[in-house]
View 1 (tube, rainbow over the protein chains, first blue to last red):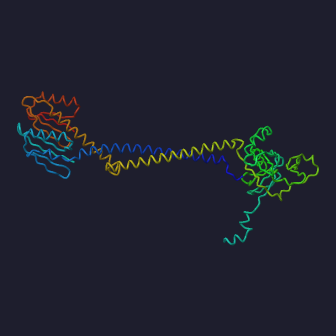
View 2 (cartoon, each protein chain N blue to C red):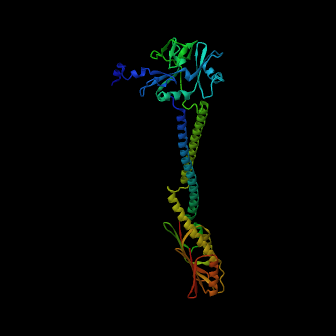
Length: 125
Length: 324
């Protein structure tokens, strides 16, 4: 007569099942959160790494093939200037700068004559 | 109390381990015959009116094999009800029993016996086979042993009857375990339900383990992404950096787009682009010798592209300012 009532055991199992179902819903929510987190991390990481790669790129020395251009490096970038340069050279130089993904913070091009112009350019990286 | 003292005094705690329970005889027609004090453990001997018994000889050696046959051995004998079965072997004969758990439990209740106080339940057949002659069990019935069977007979059949003395009874090993809800759910159904429930528990535990492992794997992958892309420790820092770079990207795209628009613009006659300037968040261009017609043409181009701009003439120089 001291045997455990089987209905109590069934009740215990049902309570255990309910607890496990509750626990499972929590674990599933954690999984959904982890999936969302990895999705977001991947998106942020890809975008950030791509943009960072582009806008922290230092200016290529081959761009400065003109003797009239003076380049000064700073801690976070470079300053490029020319008091007077040929318009064709300026076109070629600016073509490379504009088509390259540099972070231009300041630009000033002033026409001096029909064939000459001055240039002041600041790039950050 | 020290351990030695404990052993030296068997009348103390150790006595409880050797103490015999009080034995009572339970008869549905005389439920008030026994007085039971609270919390006292008792052994119960069931009156023959609480069970059905048969003595059978079978070509079977083992009790476990007979157990499977018990329902069929009582078939067509028992009235409708939910029965449990029991068997034991004496010499070459089997004593087989059928009983209703609910009937016995109800009789416990009417006798004021709590199931939790009952240590063992026995049949009169297995415990009272020693009695000599008839013994009164209530006002109208006696029990009597005939051909090794304890049978219930009316008192008037036998004139010389004695009273039942349970003090010298030595209980056999043939006790039964009552099923409290056997009348609602039989054992096989309970086992099936238990199997289903246990299966569910196992299933849920597996699901929890698998899901937790998946989560752990994903978290590990997340850490790997942080390491491989050399990200900052928190997502907030990374999002803030991304926002900063996106802002730079938008501004740089606008600079290139607007410069392209300005350079593509066809000037006429002596009109010249004399200065191009990018500073802070403004792109400005100056056109020397520009006419008002050129001003309105430039205006239309920027308007059609929905670009916010400022256009004005000053000292015959056309000024264009675009917000980046």
